[in-house]
Image 1 (cartoon, rainbow, N blue to C red):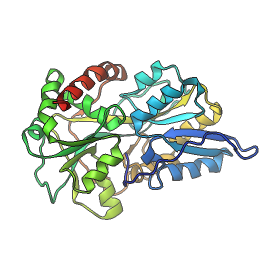
Image 2 (cartoon, helix red, strand yellow):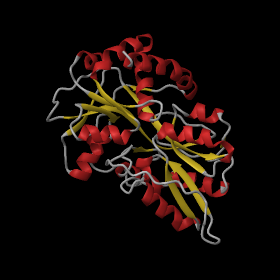
Image 3 (cartoon, rainbow, N blue to C red):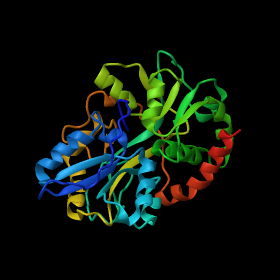
Image 4 (cartoon, helix red, strand yellow):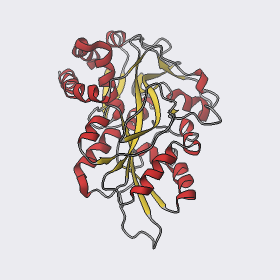
Length: 329
């Protein structure tokens, strides 16, 4: 997650002419995380104060595109850490053999138990459709109601975006064998499918659609940063799918000790306190100061949906087939 909007994709420039003796640690992340308004700059500055190193964060597309890049580069890749995968992708990522155990233990404030040996959580949230209450005061409250309505939506491509993949799994988890029927009903509500979250949210803010696939926490940005209370997340009767965002150390990391130190830092109060008002998600470990004022106004789903990593991996292919079939008609 991921506000505000803009382009901004940094160019990869691994290693190269690193200055003298200062060790360099390279972190691949999604674009909005490393943007000037995202958490990247503050986390980079705070980590560099203690590591004696040069932390380089590289934007490499949306979450699912990160994994595709890591797979393409294979053992030849020069990054140390990948930040921005989620539990829909961790089984696939683990199967590549490109990630190393992190060896980090800790008490997490997550809605699920955590014991993944390869990936460390840093924030979490629920997917939701966000709308403007002044334009759409009574939004649909289920996928069926959305499909039966004239309400337009913007969603993300599940092949490149973790929210897009999350929507597939949300419908699969909520409707099972009826998933294809749900997608067939939703097809004419979809204005467009974007590669990533930033593009979709930007189109929504420009008035190109009534609702956008985002998070229950997205309205907090508008409320806290802009003093704008017109954005809200629609509560769905089926419940809402959870996303836990994670980071992992690559097995061939040039700086493995620094990479693990960075993952440990991600769970620190200094890093966790930054995330609610930069990445606009819930922190994986509650900071000492708690959540900012305004988070108490957000939608709290009564029912959470989440597949295990293995279940998500097994569901992904058939769900993609149903999504493609519905949108190709």
